[in-house]
Every structure is written in structure tokens, then in C-alpha cells.
Length: 78
Image (cartoon, rainbow, N blue to C red; front, side, top):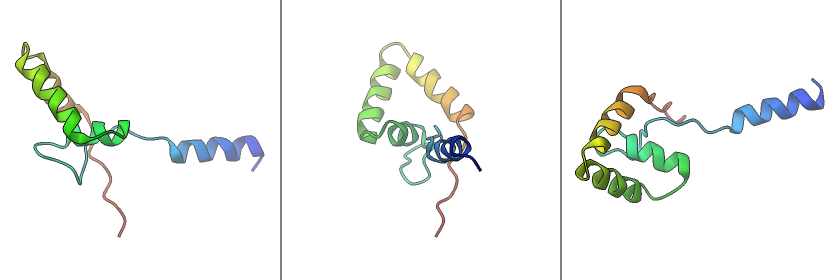
């Protein structure tokens, strides 16, 4: 394997994927998954989601769509 192929392989392994959280979920794990992806506090993401849902309702639609579209996280190896 050449150095370029090795670097590309390592990059693929470390690339984060946006998926629902298995460990930090209140309803479907969408906010927990977004927080893990962005490396921020999940409560902050939940607060933004609630504000968006109350201020017009488009946040609720976005949450439902994300809950349907986002894949489940792979279980952690024990």
C-alpha cells in the first residue's frame, strides 16, 4: 500500500458520520446525535430544537424528518 493510499484509508476511518445517538437519547436520539457530531452539549441542541419548534413549527417538522432520515448509530463494541 502506498503512502497516499494509507493516508486516504486513515481519513476514511476517522471521518465522523451524522447518526442518531444510542447513548444520549430522550425521544429518538436526533439531538444527541447532532451534539456528538458537532462535539457540543446535547442540551444546547435540544434548546435550539424546542425554540425552533415553538417559533413557527418548522423545527418540529425538521426534527421528524431527521428522525426518519438519520441512520441509527452502530452499537459500541464491548
